Amino acid sequence: MGKALKSGVTIKGTKNGLHFLLDETRPFSTILNELKHKLEGSPNIWDGPETHVRIKLGNRQITREEETALRNLFSLRENLIIQSIEASNGKPYLLRNQGINVQAGTVRSGQVLDHRGDLLLLGDVNPGGTVRSTGSIFVLGALRGLGHAGGEGDESAIIAASNLRPTQLRIADVVSRPPDEWTKSEMSGMNFAYLVDGRIVVDKIHHLNRIRPEIEWKENRFRG
Image 1 (cartoon, rainbow, N blue to C red):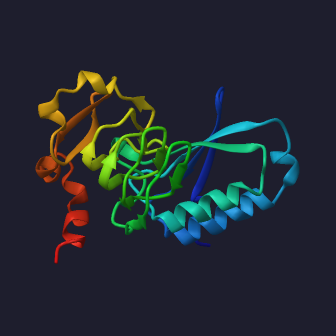
Image 2: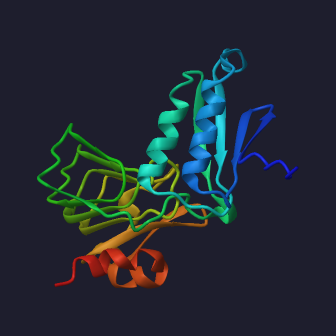
């Protein structure tokens, strides 16, 4: 008789909730099928109070579509609240080369532009306007309002703008220092903001490939 195959989904209880450990060596479709079976079966196991869930992918990174499928499965149990999705070694859990959404227009005061993934805005963000994304934000125009990138915890996300004069910047859970502390020399020309050592710093756009080499594809995508 053959040896029983080890489960691809391991669930561990902690004082802060549940950890779902997903086997990085199995096809992700197989993992999703097993997870669906666990969540749909034995309903009495999952009934109960609101429980925080941390999903651990190991060395695997997933696409936006795979993330959506994963979140949809957990929506079967309203009391299971996904607190985080994590890959090993602190790397982003999402594959970064999943395309970039392009939108055109002006985000005016009081308006909020929300997006899942990386966003390229062809226009301005006026004071009082907000642009938020789970990925990086690129503004070919003036960013004078609030920009929040990496909204679901992606600390590798950046915020770039032709004219970076925000009222506030946020990357993941980190909020920027007040803009009046940035000198004119720092902010002239096209710049980008990124997270390092728990704080947001600003640099010239031509340093992007050196600081964030993993997103070089974005620059190549828009070359003629």
